[in-house]
Image (cartoon, rainbow, N blue to C red; front, top):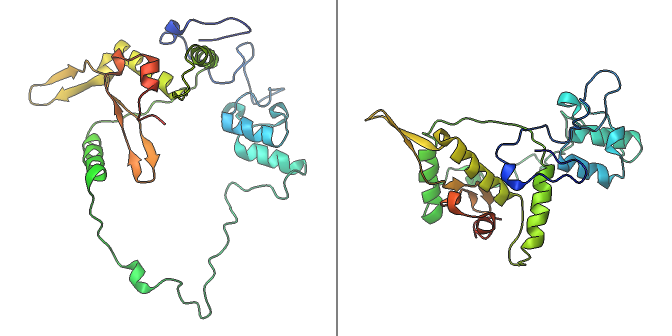
Length: 241
């Protein structure tokens, strides 16, 4: 799925579009050798850091994979330009030392280090149970970089057509719905194995959980039947941040 200039790719082609690395110009292929374009690969956080220092990412030589510009590259370049007093070290951090009172005695009472039992109740107890069950399911991890120009334009167009101020428009509902579309295309990814009967059950519903860090710890709220929800209905889900 590529958008160049004013060309807009229809959103219904999201599931079948080829993946292209994020931030890579399709007319050139970055290389570590020769006159490789600088700053061709970087994350939004890195580009934001570059903007904070008033730099151009094209001037920074990336040391990451395939010439990716890392946070350390930006900070080192900023230091070379006199924007930082000291270049950061990837292996060392000036975290300081803990000051002890005279005599070197601990700041805390020894009883502080004794083991304590904290009972889990309510939601935390339910989370421990569900996460323990989830750990028994075989897991695999897949990582792919894709060009999201069309997704950015789709979100902007969607936001213009849906101006409800009570709805916070983010990319997460689009990703959740895209995952549901992928499960429809590859149903084996949404299946379970019954050992007693040697059968594989293909699940009809797409119940997608989203892990979230909260003050009470990790929680994984689940959005039910995503396959039958629109992007706006997913956005209206109270669980989403």
